Length: 379
Ligand code: NDP
Ligand code: MG
Image (cartoon, rainbow, N blue to C red; front, side, top):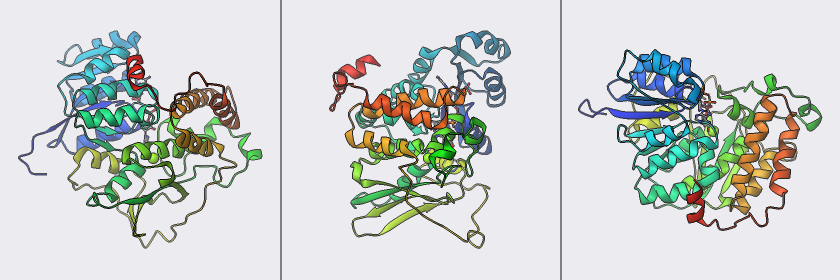
């Protein structure tokens, strides 16, 4: 980027999370390129205050109204505007004080602010995959209508996005999403039934928020990513394939109609796709650790075990049947993960809960072709 370039004003929705804090590291390392204009948290007022004092944003939002006074008091000597509550997230997303939203809230809660930002014509760096799982049709259509770029942050989708640069006229045969397999790769149900929360929260390759770490352990994360890929890259379900790649070096691949396969590689570090989403279409220099191919002796691949990790099979069913089934699946998964994290259900119960919810007779509620206008009115 040239030194003449104006500073890109970033709104980080979910600044206190794993993605949010890493994005702030990228911003801190590149003060001539970026400013943190909006920061939002849900409960973590202490970290939000600390971030606000360090980055001096225009606006902060604390989701939990009860924490408003604490945040307001702590920032009283600054010009930072403080808002609170769910509605404030949407109101701030509709403001003009930023150029790009990093959508890094976890779960369904991220949908509405992201939709408002798109309607507001703001570029989106999308980490929140649930947004596309529950409303991919609406999000992608609104993005086209408002000429808003949706730049993926999820490492697999960032990889595919990078593989597709310069290939606009070439047909994709399929995309191959790589999955580490999580901490329980190779395990069977008799082991998984006894898995405890603390163990499931230990991911071998990535350090992430609690919800996505559990989703990675159950392989639901890869299922959500299949649906995310379908919307981002306008693919048919049969064009999205998953392969287990325990080293997490190849972040994903694209196979073109001549059989040629392009892959994007890197060490498993989310700061790289975060930085790329913020600087796209440029790449900028950084001091992140580099790959050393002399030390990477093995890159291995295997079929996912969908009989054991049934969440992936359920997500494939949702991908194929489409309509509002992915939304139903996502809702059940959010509840299941929440319950598991509170030790209320066991590891395998999560899949049973999701399966039962998906099989529930939603006949009168199942819309193979969602009535978009009425759905938008519900939002
Ligand atoms: P975290 O749980 O670490 O952070 C979530 C952020 O969202 C926090 O700032 C949190 O605030 C805020 N938040 C939580 N609930 C609400 C709510 N109801 N309303 C408003 N804000 C809320 O999540 P991650 O950073 O791990 O993940 C964020 C998103 O990015 C997810 O959708 C995930 O799937 C996706 N993603 C994450 C990756 C990773 O490496 N972490 C990789 C690829 C995708 P508070 O801290 O106050 O609770
Ligand atoms: Mg991912």
